[in-house]
Length: 473
Image 1 (cartoon, rainbow, N blue to C red):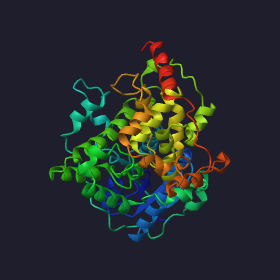
Image 2 (image 1 turned 30 degrees about the vertical axis):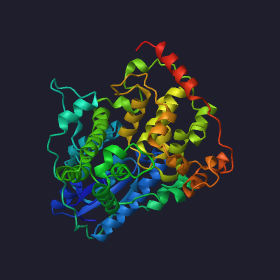
Image 3 (image 1 turned 45 degrees about the horizontal axis):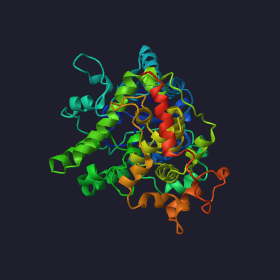
Image 4 (image 1 turned 90 degrees about the vertical axis):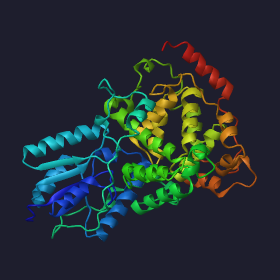
């Protein structure tokens, strides 16, 4: 093949045509563009739910490219070798991608960029996955931010680059390179029967993401500050699913919400703050990469976690059968929808790490298996925030009481009844669907008796406090 002037666009977590800096730059070159997604080790290591959701996203994005004249190429293997082969096959001399900030991805990308530049290949990487590049936000002394509120104050009035226009025309090579079949990657393999249940809750692709955001800003953002903690109502944007795969960009979300804020919607600022909270997670991941796998605060390394992954209490937590209704409802919501309400995430994380005294890594890894909106930075920071080992300015001994939280945020019992079949004589369809989504090996049925607490809240709280008091922080 003689395509000496082609540009290779390496597709990662940027499954959109609008506000896609790498794709836009490739097409603005005026040369044929070859989009390629690589099924590498990092992709293969994804948990069941995020891998399945990525497969759906790639299939949808491939169709979107086809509609404007492009063809998404699927290749598997070690990225540098795959890209080298593709360059040799096509004669391409220009490679572009949008940046990722996970440590393994950054190390890999830096090595690839260096190797290809040494070969005379032009390599460009672009931002767009966050509002502010992690290396661009510094304290007055030149360091990174360790606490969210100062970070928010530092960036909230900064200009965010306007989103780029949607790509509507594509210049493809006359003869494209060979491609593997996405189906051969078996992205849904780990989901089992849960895929059929969860698929009904997926909002797939760029158009769905834009519609979801527009609907939220039109109908719900005015009440966001009051409703975002109430799990039984539509009080949040649910846009995290699409942000995780780049089906919408944070810049698109920011500017749309900013317009809403200027139009007088009081809740818009609270939503903007949450977008910056996501940025803060990536800020910490970039500057302190150990947050993804180790205690962010080193003095927690000797903390006496007393419950391991094989403990029956952990098994009950995973099944949503702890006997603590807020915990169980939230876990079941995750198995059915692939997502969990943010207030629920805090409660189940606090219960696991404090009442059950389990290491936060156990919960982090389980969420990594089960969430379709899984995000490395947000998941790591959220678990460490709940455990006390992370960037939380509140006292380490803060322990959420799931029952008082449920009384405050679900006083009518709507959320618990929506997801827990065993507590009502006439269970909802959503509560029943939990039993259709979970592994058959769990052998759970709706007619089981709802369990007593595996650890009472008073007992769990006291054990946690005793551990904290005996630990010198």
